[in-house]
Image (cartoon, rainbow, N blue to C red; front, side, top):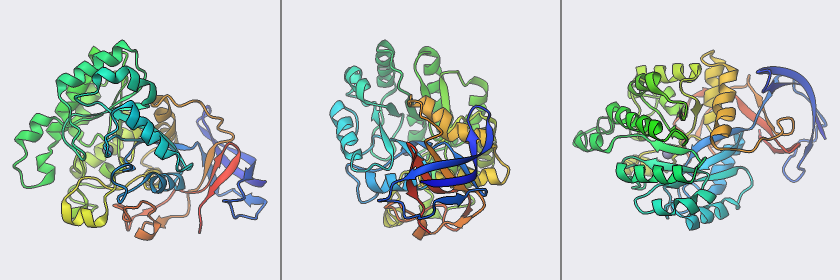
Length: 405
Ligand SMILES: [Zn+2]
């Protein structure tokens, strides 16, 4: 047993930290700590976190990432549950491909991996069977990595079907309007080819569907622009939730990531957008954060102009670093990375006295390639000084992970 004395533990009902002495068993095959008592007065414990948007690239693109490497990166920063997106090869859009991916996920036990099914031109007739196995749906309203865009007519047919079977699974929207992307495609720069109007228009469309299908759960993922926030401020319905990603808060067209590495969909915007996203996350207009961990190798990024960047390992420390600067409160961080994602994904209640992550908030680490666990081998956050690194993960009363120093 290991005793953590004077540990400040987040109390989910009281919405504050409460000092406690906690005893946990340890998995001796993994944990090397010999200490039986740890002075935890400088540490904090919060619930195990959830990342609702990752691409672990398996099957099909295992040179970029696989279940094992992605899951290890996630757990090492305090994430116990992830939702894996369907643009793999094969695409996850049938009972078979969902079960195949769940089987692949069994190769690791670092995280619980949930599987999102794509909604495609051909699968809406099978949604009743798919709904039994899929944990969520993903709708690509326009082209992105993996060519999964689907017509608005098919989306509507699928929503009718999901409503008729009373689906409680959240429907994730990559919101960029294909018509606006089409008329913008001759621009020379990536961000001009995918303007904020494309996202704003697509969001208006999702909001109108949300009104038409009030019992379905609509989730707009990776909101990137201030223009979208203006619309959402006025008409975010109760069956709509939102997330943004740290990359849109930390980086923009003028700062942050070097040119060839910064290409993502939707693109990085302007500094004002980053500021508005942070403010909206802090106030709760944006419910949650996700990483949209979408790794490519450094060589691919430098030579092929592919969209996406890693982020699952950076998600927690990047948000906790914003907290450390006073930009966002603990209550919102726990909602954005635990309570709201758990509700969105219909996760079963867990015993928070037996499941937690123990963090150090006063030991900043400069992000380097060496720190990165993703197979991508690089991070857009390199050279950033981040706090909020996990030291121990406790699952079912047992320490199952300790950060190696
Ligand atoms: Zn994504």
